Length: 276
Image (cartoon, rainbow, N blue to C red; front, side, top):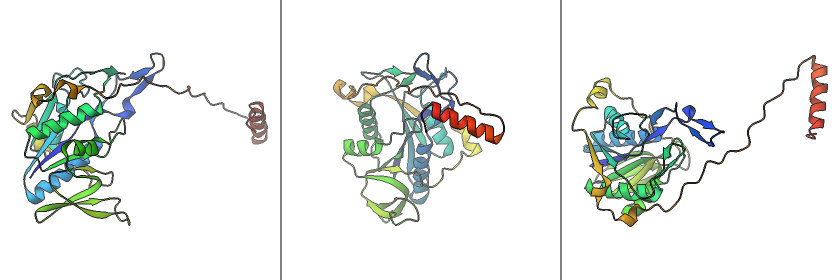
């Protein structure tokens, strides 16, 4: 069984700052991490491989932050997946119409991402299963799995907790654990599945695999121009909007003095602002 896991790099939200003077995100000190949700998908793929055998391929689309690195954008994501247990990785690189930068982030339109990944799965054929994480850490989007399934004409399972092998098929455990909403869904392969927030906790990279993950021959870099996509298929169906900032938060006021005096001052302040 060949399972392809879609992974990507994202900015850690805790390291992102907002520049109000420039009205954009300040990413000069932003830290790049692998999207945590994708690690849940990788864990499900590794457990399935351990149970039935096969191959796990980590797939990413170039466009991740580089931070001055010489490596292909997104390569760190697939190298980390290999360190965790994936057999090999593929990085899709190239250019597409409408490629734009907004606030320092490359934002390929979702329709382009879907078509490029679907074409890459065709090149990797035969693929039995494509797995994604539930949502992106920064943008919260989680629509890749259904869009990819629609493009491929494959069945899709969302909010998956785990994947179980039964005979010649797979069963997806879907929903929230230990609840009435949890059920088992037979999957006809090939299929797409998105791992939910309650899936099995991802494993850590094994020390012996961390160094070996950067060996030669483990990661293929494919140009999207070689995937057979027409120019109109690489045209975005949406345009990124500007960064909209809300009103700046007003600083608080400290009221001192004895409790009775502080209470009197607080009431006076609230009345002056017509809040009571």
